[in-house]
Every structure is written in structure tokens, then in C-alpha cells.
Image (cartoon, rainbow, N blue to C red):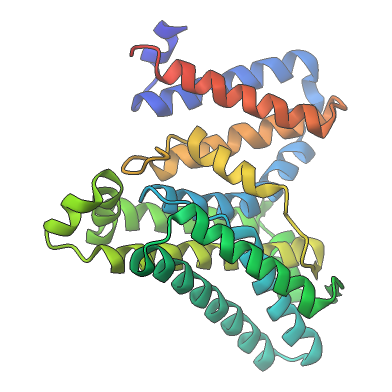
Length: 316
């Protein structure tokens, strides 16, 4: 196995992820055959991946700083409820634009709140975002009374259900956002500051970098990625509700770690996170076709994470 890993291109984490994709494909080709490799199955994977992908990117960028964002799901639902309420109450293209802008501004406000609590007040990221998650989730239910808001215009429905030349538009949107985040992290001064902050916050501060500004920016970007996920959720479900996606929070953390993001900060790449999402989505799709319980699927995802960590640290 180690010989095969060394033969694959790229850095070690990427090689391990590519190896896992090959193994998963081989296993499901033996057990499911053409059922797994059907066009419909791959279109299903391509349709489901973007929402979780945007949320995982939002989680991953905060973990690069040594933090975490437990409020991403609650933030996405808050944005979708606000946008959905405006769209349903005021049909028309001008109010659609207003709804999108309102959702984005709400995401920015949530990101700034998280960033201020962490960077200025000094609250630990896990406690700060746990607090905002609880606050936002409670407000979501209180304001909406747990009701479903539905009936969105064709533009919203196209985002998550439309396609371009047979390729789901949501997947193209996700790849575009992932590329943009790659550029931000690896080709800009802000990106280098994020990695430095995750490696050593005190040294980064002494080097003249405004660490508070960097942290606030990171949590704003994370919240905006939740806003993007909210749009896709509204489109896929043609509705908005306070409780959507509650089971995805731990999966976004799993995808980030499996993608090579160091939970202590300072290391991780967008390409690694994207490959990790592909592994998880293939596993979920294949196990669903086999009729495996969703609880067992979650357990197997944990097993994949343990195997990945073991292979990653084998040389050590």
C-alpha cells in the first residue's frame, strides 16, 4: 500500500485521498457494479455535494486559524428564512435582489459577531460559536414558529436543480467558489496571514499583522459561505426551515479534518477538502444503494477518518 501511495502524484495527504477514492470505487464496483457507475448516481452525487461543500469550506477556513465555526448551519437557516420570507411576501425581481442582499448582510453581521467575540473579547472559538449557534437557532424557531416557507421563483430553483450542458449548476457554482477560496488562501496576503495566524498567533501579531482583523475577516467569509449554502438549500428543497441540515455540522468538521486541515490551525488546502468531500459523498451514495442504515454510514465515516489519520501518521 505504501508503494502505491508513493507512486501517486502530489503531496502525501492528496495521495492518501486519491488512494481512498480508488479503493471506494473498487469496492462499489464489486458490490454494486453498474448501479453505482450509472449516470443517475453520479448526477445525484454532483447535486448533493455543493451544499455540504460550501458549509465544509466555511468550517475549514476557520479551522485554518486554529478556530472553529459551530454556527454555520444555524447561520445558513437564518439566511434562508430571511430571504424566503422577503421573496414570498414580495414577489418580483426587485425584491428578489433585495432578499439576496438582506441574506448576505445578515451573514456578514453573524460573521462580525463571531469574529468580535473571538478576536476582541477573547472568547474561545468553540464557546463563541456555540453561543451564537444556540442564539441563532433559537431565534430561527422563535421568529418562524418552526413553519416552512416555500414557493420560490424559478431563479432560486435553478440554482440547486438546474444544469448547464448536463452538469449541475450547483456543482459549477461550488467549484467556482472553491477556486476563489484557493486563490484567496494561496495567492494573497490575507491567505498567508491566515496560515501564519493558525501556526502561531502571538508571533503573527508581533510581525505587524492585525490578527484581530484577519480573524474577523475569516469568520465573515465563513458566514458568507453559509449564505451560499442557504441559497442552494432553498433551491433543492424549494423551502426554508429552521431545522434543515442539523446533521451536517459534524460532517463538515469530518470533511475538513479528512481533507488535511489541521484542527490546531496553520495547515490545510482547498483541494484536499474537495477530495475529502468526494470520498464522503461516494461512500454515502454507495451505502444508500446497498440499503445500509444511515447510522452505520456515520460510523463508517468515522472509521474512514481513523484510517486516514493512521495512514497519514504512519511514517511518524
